[in-house]
Image (cartoon, rainbow, N blue to C red; front, side, top):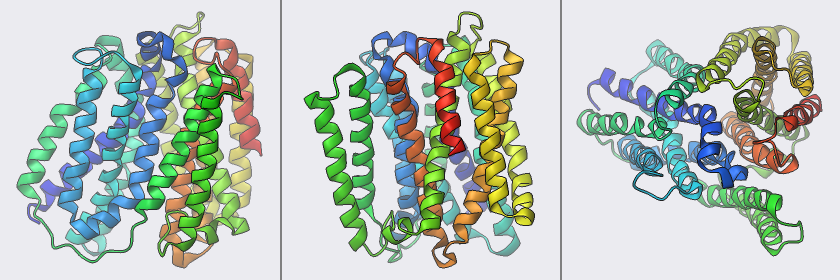
Length: 437
């Protein structure tokens, strides 16, 4: 490789773009609900399928970069991300205005975006050593929080001033530029043998979660005994069983059954799943609530600013939680974060309309979630130090799957959530009990 700074710059920019697209759509959901009025049950999918696709790609991309070389994997990911952005932006312009198409193209975005972070870390490990490597990894670690801070506000700004397609089409020139620069500055590296990658496990996990989400979504408009619902849920159960069998016999499983069977690790994975449900569901339904409630009617910019302010609380509280956890242990901090999250969500069940009150409660819920997540991550690493990488990946996958399934399930439990603000308090109550448990 050559031009180290140029390489790192485009990798960081790509990672930022991938993280940004995860959050920018949340603020646009009410507008998209008006664009696709007959497809309200599918609105959460616009966030969750991209999240799920990226979550599946993440653990595989680093191993594929070992096997095929970082340049090839990075360019493939950026091509998918840019293509998904272009096609998403063309829905309703040159392509039919159908939410099914938009969902499919969001999957492409997620598959491509999930490549950037692990390939970036691979490149950093090749280019740098010692303190320089540590410093670069530290900069890379700030990309996700920065995107979480700017994404909702950027989405609100764009959705208030431009057609909704702009939130996707703006990625295209940036993506094409990154591809051209990467072709010029990144050199091919000789492929290594690489560790075994569990592509079968990733495919089975994706299909299992997808069928579960489809079954839950169809349950809203069909009876539980409907062949469509039963076939989807039964298919998810069958694929889940096959997944377990495949993972049991794989040398490097995506989901290690021995770790899942560990009581401490099982608790951590369960709590991580609940964290994913709570975090992404709250963000999605909060954005809908403040923009739809007749007594609020907040603009996209206002809703985005409130979500971004909550992200500031997460960024500030994360290092503090790490220091406190090191001194007081994990359990007290997990309990404190859970209580703060539950109380703030319980308070939302009265459906306040004051933006200051709502912003404060959202901030408290996100800080509580962060206070819980940090010690969970640290505790997971202490279960089996020799499997720290696998544990981190499984914990992230658990959170991602919670974020994918949770909003879809809640939109079924409270079928009017996207159109009736009266359901928001019940969603918050449900989340509060989940966090408390």
